[in-house]
Length: 200
Image (cartoon, rainbow, N blue to C red; front, side, top):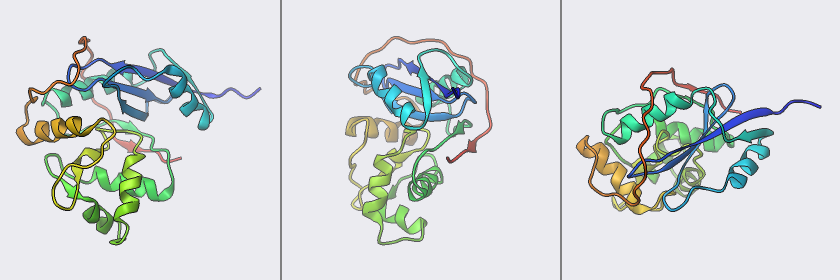
């Protein structure tokens, strides 16, 4: 029997944006999603891992403290850029769209049309929006920085208020007051890692 790759799930209980993280056995971030109402069921995360031939475990793994530390710094207004290894699992077009998201500077926004133009496909705004909706690593791959052509906030996995909160955080450089759900805090280490995209 061939041993399956092990992925590791953990939760960040932050008072503004509770998050769920999944890292592969090499410490690369493969999933970062929102957990505003309740923690996602472990079975759902396990099914996601199994679709990619991996086994999910709810236990600490490589890169956990680093990822949590950098996310807490960002959510506290003390980090502008992430230096985490990413493993973005998707189609070629999706990965190109997500790479374009990584190129949107901190504190700035782009429209879906502008993102499509950056891909060299100016008529693909709708397809770009769909790809952004499938972004597996929210926040770090900043789909929240994409807005409607008129500047209005559009759909977002964590909800419009979460999107507004993140944009305000980046605009002001400090943590906004809005809090969708209280949650316990947990100390983590604040080290650094090298950004590396590992498409599969």
